Length: 360
Picture 1 (cartoon, rainbow, N blue to C red):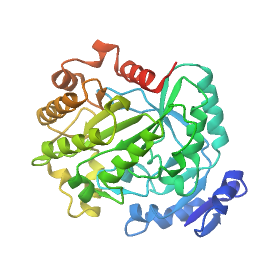
Picture 2 (picture 1 turned 180 degrees about the horizontal axis):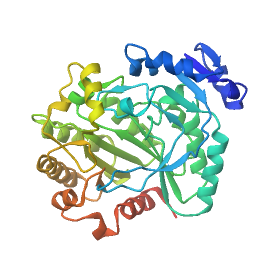
Picture 3 (picture 1 turned 45 degrees about the vertical axis):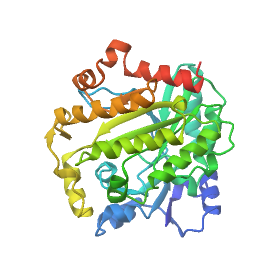
Picture 4 (picture 1 turned 90 degrees about the horizontal axis):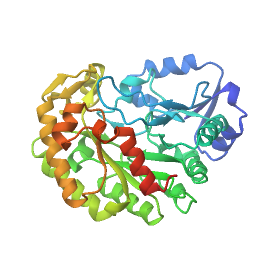
């Protein structure tokens, strides 16, 4: 079901989405009733995944990644085009982040393009992604926004776009003039985690096949092992994923690989318990971190990191690996250095993007 806010009923992009859709459409003057409908459902999160609200973004589209106090942030910029997700991963923080949870897409993309033009005019390196508040490619059913962004980024040489996904919705991305300024990026996990914790996502094999197709089209790639779920014999399972990854794509075309173990805000625990009755992911050895998120006991995290980093480096010694939201001690004990010793995490990522994506 697609709901349209009355004030954007005749917006050009609204009309384009409606004309291409075979879904039921309803124009609403007041979103309060819709929000109440979702909030009072037996499972508001599931209900919100079946409703798409077209509206305007009345704030900035470009935002700094909020990061987490006391943990190292990568200096990413978020391009906020849409919210929430059609897929259903047990660990997803979006379940607890949006109130009410529902799919929302902002049609005033001309304002977004103006913000990008201003940023491009600075002629500085920026790493920008659309996969923070939603999956980057789930709206391809209704829009061609990712393709439009890819071609827009391809016309400049200083900024790079990362499209992060667990889907294989790459049809719109093929045969575009991307100029290597868009990184096609996949979140990866073990077969066990995908099968038990990631409802509605593409299989591991399908994700890797999609990445290989994009590489053939000249796209640079990135991969994210986040969240890593620690369980018995998980190290061998993650090593198997890494082996399959490097059999699927070239190690020299990977801009970066991130790793981050599962962490969660306390309010997410009840959601997981209620919505994923068979999930065991919240029953590991957790302690409260400096950001008030529950995290695996640090020695457990570091032991895992060291083994996985070593395995990746055996296959791809030059690929850039980084942590998503870890402290300097974890870096030092896992990598043998801290980002500060190499100019900072942002500089490390910028350098890799410059080299592989041909940034100026």
